[in-house]
Image (cartoon, rainbow, N blue to C red; front, side, top):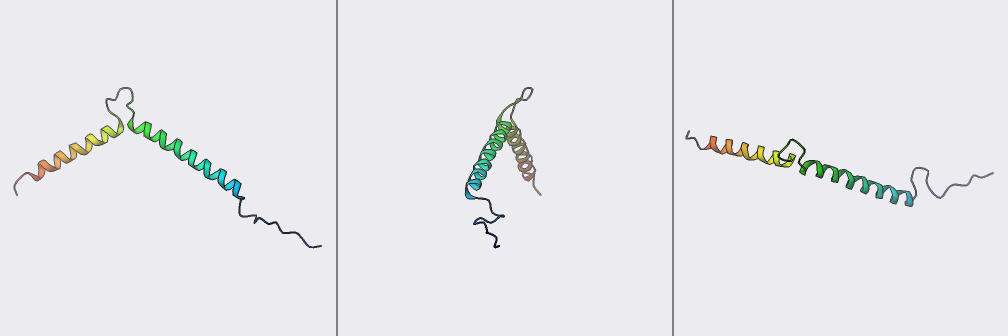
Length: 74
């Protein structure tokens, strides 16, 4: 008795499942990106600046120190 082969390969999910998974990945990406944006740009109680503000201040301070050091004659 011959066995019938399925038209779909057992290793490949159907297209509908792939579309649902792709939609789920996009949703997860948007949620994680939103949470990261809020955490980076929001100020927390007890802090006067956000994480991005602190990072920018650190770059400005480092650049000021570097340019001051370069101003010395050799």
